[in-house]
Image 1 (cartoon, rainbow, N blue to C red):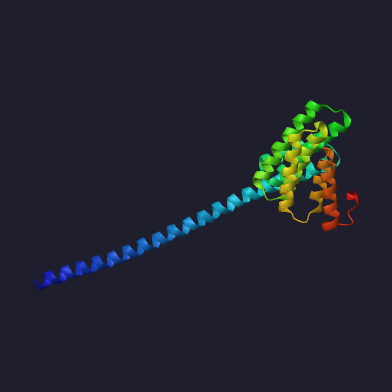
Image 2: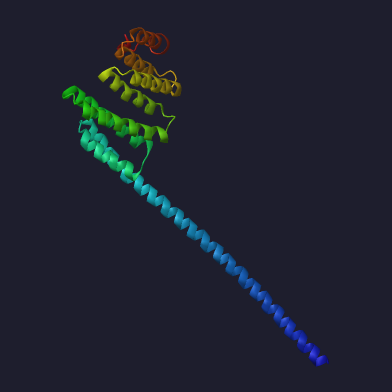
Length: 220
């Protein structure tokens, strides 16, 4: 009986020891799995950041090329680079530049050939790209300023009352986002003058000179 009892206790002790070892091994295994997962997640995050950074750099290189082309009035080539840019990385800045290039092309055609159909297409594209820029940065007053400029071009072409109203709305929005910005007032005065609202233009210019910049010569 004593022998049997000792044997049983021995097996129990051995089983307990093996159980503790198994638990310890399981714990170590879980820790290893957790550490491996952390490393894997860190690698994935690092890879994602690297991919985004590469895209941003590639887009920025094309953007700089587009800006240089626009400065020399090579608008068609600039447009191609900018469209490639927004495909790579669709940011507000790139859409903003794209809308400006389309508007510049439209103004160039107005001054040269006056091809109304070509101008109309460019104006619609400028509005589309400007909308994309505003969707991404609606609080950037420059996007609203450009929007006003686009509609003002329509006003200059055909005295459209609808375009005039839209232009004023855009300039008003720009003014609300950039208070004390006399350039917004000046542009709003210009579109009022273009639509034969001479009194409204005069009031804006007087406000500009009185409240914001009395030395701004273009307003005199």
